[in-house]
Image (cartoon, rainbow, N blue to C red; front, side):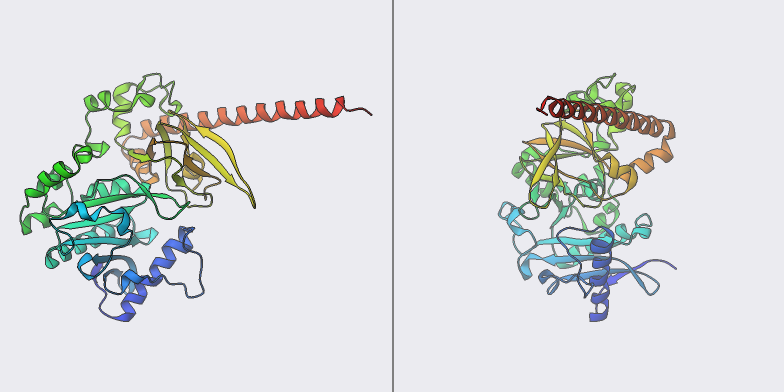
Length: 387
């Protein structure tokens, strides 16, 4: 039976969307900002005036998305979206897509693409030309592939919360959708081109105008871009790429995405669902273990270092939090991208995994040597005490 996407017209259909949010965000992903409740549903103030889309497989709700128009009220995270800079369309042609989620077993079935397409058509029906979304790092590639663009720096969901990426889609900017091969291009062409969108973005956000997803970058672009931490052929600065030639590393990097962090912004928090592995490009990061009363810095990462690999391999919750020590950049590889690599280039995937296990073994031996050294010092202190 085909998946059917439609607007939630009844309260029962909206309730199904609220319950699905709880099932995915709380029961599956264990989002720290969403504690368990007896009601087992997530309804928010923005839902009142929003269009709620639901995807169904028969009688089962398997996906949902929320479409909110600025003309009807404030948007979620509005203080971070730089809305005044979109003055030609603010407020009446501005909207936001949020709470876009799909049950785990349907995430490779095209359900999310159907939900995005439904929201895209809805935007045209409403006359909206600017649509925002706020995404977590592991979803950056997904939303870039649809047509959303980074236009501002990351922000934290709450004080001490994880960093998220604000993104925008300029609806009708068909030249950009064509460049990135967006699945929404066919829909967009039906509604016409808005060439002024590209000129606006280049003028208003010049620092982001030339930014493109890594999968579009050529080997020449990698050679002049900020990839010193991973570019050397012996990969001495990045053990995960050890033994790979520069051309192979360039090809492999197209599976990654680049993220920027401000000082003291969190990449993830202890207990979070594991959703990617990270390689430091620039700056540095600290690993923090949270105790009952005191937080402890238990490790640091500099360019070339990898972190998050344990959760990446085991799909377990994060054992510690990681935050930027200063302005820094990361490469992130999602589990889904690695699975694609394993299917399409199994030998390269095996080399990457072999390097990862070797790197983890080296860390284990270093930790063991450090522990042995500390135990020896402690025993020496005990022996030196007067009887």
